[in-house]
Length: 273
Image (cartoon, rainbow, N blue to C red; front, side, top):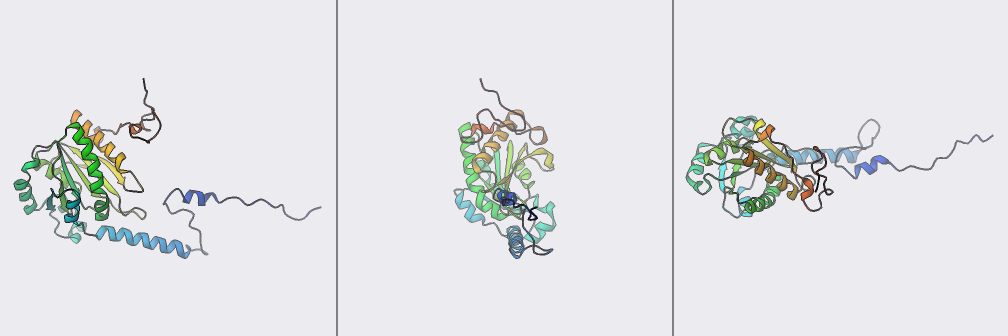
C-alpha cells in the first residue's frame, strides 16, 4: 500500500492572467493579514496621482496654442480651487468679467451649431492631455457635414453646467463640454464629454448625453469622436438630447472596430443588405 500522497502537476495561476488584462486591483496577495509592501506602495502612489490631478492647474495658454490660438479664456464664478471644490454651484456659472468677454469677443461664434467648451473640472491633467487631439478629430467630422463650431471657450474652475450658460449666450443650437472627470485610483487622466441640445441655464443632467473615460487606456479618440458626432447629428436632427437620445451608432463603421454587422451591442446585430 502506497502511503505517499498523489503528486499533482502545478497549475497556472489564473488570477495572474486576469491581472494582465485589467488595471483593477485583484490578486494582490497578502503578508500575514496585510497587503504586501509592493501592493501598498502602488496604492499610495495611485492615490497621490489622483490627488495631484484634482489640484493641478490647467495651462490654458498652452492648450490654446495646441488648438491654434483662436480661443476665449474664461473663468467660472469660483475664484480659486478651494472655493471650486466646496461650492459646485459657482463652478456652473461664469464670473462677470468672463460673461462680458464672451458677449464682446464671441461675435464670430454667434448662432453656431455647436458651442465648444473645455473646462478643467476635477482633472486638469485629462484636459491637458486629451482635449486637443479629441477636438481635432471631432472638428474634422463636423466640417465634412458642414456644421459650424464656435471658437473653443477655455474655462478655469468650470463644472459641466457652465456650458449651458456659454451656449445660451452664444445662441448655439447645441453645446459640448470636454472636462476632466473625477480621478480614480487607476485613471487620473480620464476625460468626459457632455453634449446638450438647446443649452440654457437651469438644465439638469437629464438633458445631457455623456461620453466618458476618454484616455489612452480607455475610449480612443476616433471612437469618442465618432460617438460624439453621431449624438450631435441626431440631436440637431431630432431636436433633443439627454435621456431621450440614445447612442445607437454603428461601431463597426470605424475601421478595425468590431465585426461587420455587429452594430451596437445593446441593440443587437445590424442587418446588411
